[in-house]
Image (cartoon, rainbow, N blue to C red):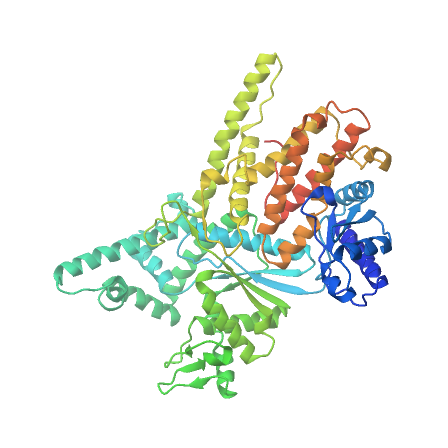
Length: 619
């Protein structure tokens, strides 16, 4: 595919400058520091000549003048000029306008996309929920980040495998199973009208409530003993003993226990599927801990046989972490031969390498697990050179609420579904108020008013709510710990998703008052563009491919989110300027400006789609 306009301009400038620098006596120009001047009036790109002063024994000002005089032309260049020891260049704005709009009007589905990593496969794991409760706000950040990053990586050419690992076994699962077994009275999600993952999560919360009641009664009988909840659960609780026995029965393959486990997990999966569908998330590969917990033992045994790992006196297999630049020793197999979490992760990683052979494997997991992944990747590298180096932990900060952190066992989390419902309801209320105002204005003008249907308003409200949620999360770099504010996320002004949607939708109202363009106008018509505000918008538009590429390279969707906000601001400056009133513009200026609006709309829609955000045609 032909290089994007912004690349062609920068490459043309760099090549021309290198030729000129060579002509004045510098055989190796090194890395050229090209960047926009501090003052836009000075040009579009500038390069300091100070690095060559010592070599050429001439003042930077003189060197700049010599380079400017020797620099050859290239498509898109207006001129080079010397200024205070810098060589500044100005682009041919007529060329930039024509080529920029032609690029933005692409209709082949490749707007902003590249083939940089074509032919390379990448696996990205994200989500990783537990089947004892619904997904909460923390999962939302993981899901939204994983969705956006996988979209961006596809945009730069990777063959992306979206993977999930579901934690569907363990003592926490048995807690909800035991509570249901004892207190469920054969209720089902269908009989209670409760979504499956919420239904099961209720019993997880109920177990914790019953455990606390049991612990309080025990403390009353043992007033002199200090004990924490974990020790009580393990050593004194009858509920705890029953849950641990259920886990043993599960591992032994007890039919009744497995049947209950399968039924409750199925209820949860149905709930998860609805949540994922609402967020626009799909997976190509799903691992289940009930399968992966048996993996890794053979990997560890091989490492033991080759001397990478060692057996401790008590029979446990450990790794000396100094081999991977860390401190201490890590247990990989307990003395009784059972595995630990990292053992399972080793086996799961090896299975994925075997199944997909990805050039890169990315784990989207909160920063609480930073050390875990340092160890995991180090062990993979010890076991097979190159494996660990192909892995990357996309670590992200936690999400706080205005009232503090979430606690699953106490039922004080902000569930993903409830949060999405709340944002939709907030958007719905605003939309209804807006419709009422439009009705009143139409009546004042004596005009007919056709109100949108309730179904249409609800669909818009859902998209606005989703845009608020996703954009709020993605506008921050992954490593940033954030405090989610529902009111701020849904605001129609500021750096928000609804602001971007409003910018998109208002163009449709412009087109209704004029006419919709089905093709890009001729160059003769586009030559009517050229005011500073129009040029500023077009210069921002052509930066889109670079924003996509940088966001993908950095695994940081905030780079694209921030670009889209600046793009929407540039459009707002154009749209709200009295001298750029499209309806009142004469031809051919009006048609050219409509083409510019459509170009903005196409780029904004594509960028939001990469972030997992759907646009609305009318706000």
